[in-house]
Image (cartoon, rainbow, N blue to C red; front, side, top):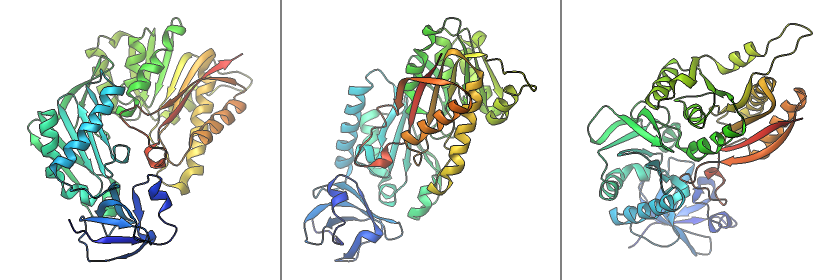
Amino acid sequence: MTLPTLLLRPGEADRVLAGHPWIYKGSALRLTAPAADGALVQVKDHRQRLLGVGFYNSRSKIAVRLLAPERVEVNEAFFEERLRAALAHRQRHLPHATSFRVVNAEGDFLSGLVVDKYENALVIQTSALGMDQRKGMILAALQRLLAPTLVAERNELASRKFEGLPDANGLLAGSGDGAVAARLNGLQFATNVLTGQKTGLYLDQQTNYARVAAFVPLLPGAQVLDCFSYLGGFALHAAHAGAAHVHGVDQSAEAVAAAGANAAANGLAERCSFEAANVFDWLKAHTAAPAHEKVLPRFDLIILDPPSFTRTRASVPDALRGYKEIHLRALKLLKAGGILATFCCSHHVDAATFQDVILAAAFDARRVLRRIATFSQSPDHPILPSVPETEYLKGYAFEWAR
């Protein structure tokens, strides 16, 4: 197999040798032969030593996305082998899950590809040209391995524009309106793989739902506040764990209605309530107090799971102000001895910075916090330390220690 060769500039190979699959356009010295966008090329350092093969795209800032350190043929058999390895990882680390992320792009050595499984339905996202061109191969391999009743694509990702790709959404195989009843940790969540946020649910929080719910038995008669509750992931798990009452707040009236329906479907409606409101405004209104009066803490467990506050490094300062604001307000509503579980999915805000913001809010609220847990994304979203982009979700649980 003769492939066009992309030669790297001196000093650009170390990051690749450490395991990062992206070859930036600025790292390239030259192509030894013309290569079509999306074609497979081999990458060598300036001394002609092979670094791997991957998909080329002249229109992207990422000139090559490496797939393997050796020469391989990228066909259905290749994708089936990679998919089998990804499924084996899930079977090892999430053996009882029936809804999970099957492929997490770079974390599964398939840069530019995400596949989510909701029971018998699959959702594919292709954020790289080379992957998008081979969607048929990927689909065939998935059908052989998982026999899904429905396969959808949700390709409205902003990153596709940088690859020269248009949006593409709809059914790739099967039929139906996209409605799915997914099970997470034994609870049922109705979602729609064609219209829901992300690909339908926040699968990256699956293990964290259970871990946070495990605090509920430590708080007899627990009153729980779930901010940014979406379809009720944390709320329903907390109610199922024995909370006396859980109140969820989310800006989307549609999500609030769906969360209420999910609570009813799981027999938890009597212990759950959901409200459509801007969380910042809700927290501000419920922490307002007349002069010389204190806010009365109302909740034993508060969960903060906001969407990303920043997509760029330039807007990090604004994001940090937002994170501090919601933590300051939440801490004023937390009872003594209560627990705050909080998450950040902004890749540009690292874990240490996120904790610093929480501690700054605690200082202003005159609270001393004891950290009792550290959270990350579920193991179906594997992290490669050599690829920092694979790690984005971080979180903590704190007790208000007195």
